[in-house]
Image (cartoon, rainbow, N blue to C red):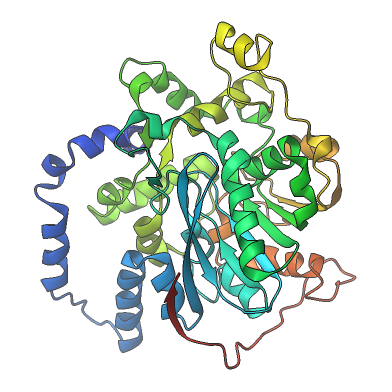
Length: 441
């Protein structure tokens, strides 16, 4: 019975548009009314200490704050910026400002947003760590997620708005954001780190628009979802693929737009099943998962994607080819002058790239990552996280991710001394007189 419930929750993730259409009936009323009732309800837990009560209130607050307000809450100088791409999409960027410091752009993965790099708080998340080490941190949001649902002429309620994949994110979104950051800061180059699809789109950009290689000092590739031959047997990939081939699934344009949180908050048991369902996708690791923070994760994740992004990933999994989106044979001939799209040429990616991967990542198999490294134009190093259970989302969510991973990144960036034993040393950096407050631009 538990396995069936777990599978149904996974399928519901793929059916989020259907859930959205019947949302009012499922939760028995308007979302705003529910939020008002939650605010009015006085929560109390027996035998709860003052510290535990404060933590619970913080978790509830952090689950509902926007990324800029979340950053400001913890004493960092937050800004909101808007960037328009060549093809008219209006993207939101969040910034942890450090005026005059080297800019560092962080780009999220599939179904995520800029929240992924701050959601676990100042003692864990990468964006805060980089800010503490005097980087001017910029957080990107790809087209279609909750922060980037605007366009100069298209409406997100129209199907044409959703006619994009991570190819367009690499061709248009990343170049627009990089150019904007360099223009605002006055720097000629920046550092970049991507998680999962944040790597996929980056390598698309550098192979298709190679001049952008010169604008990036280094690429820190976390769990790069690029080559995916070994992912073909993933059971949920097969299930979603079958769904897209169905009559209902073939018409879907938008997916994963947040309804998952309503299912997972029903009972303690459904919450656990939801976590197990996530583990079924990314890899199981209870030891490094902070269950108390799951409501915060649910408040920000998933953040919405185009169905075409998911379909594109399924294509590269099935074909074993890292290539642009494949249409019908006739349309491919018109677009690519061949019956199938040409592979992206990773040898054109000349940005110094350091790759981080793990053995328990069900979406990025080590053999695929190593094959990718063989084809990239300038791999300066790779780091297999020395924790057997480390999974795809542990790169952002793991309790000890700083010790297990980010210390190594700081060594690569020259912010920590190299450890001859291969393990980083913890260095505590004070924010000092860092400015506080929220500035909208």
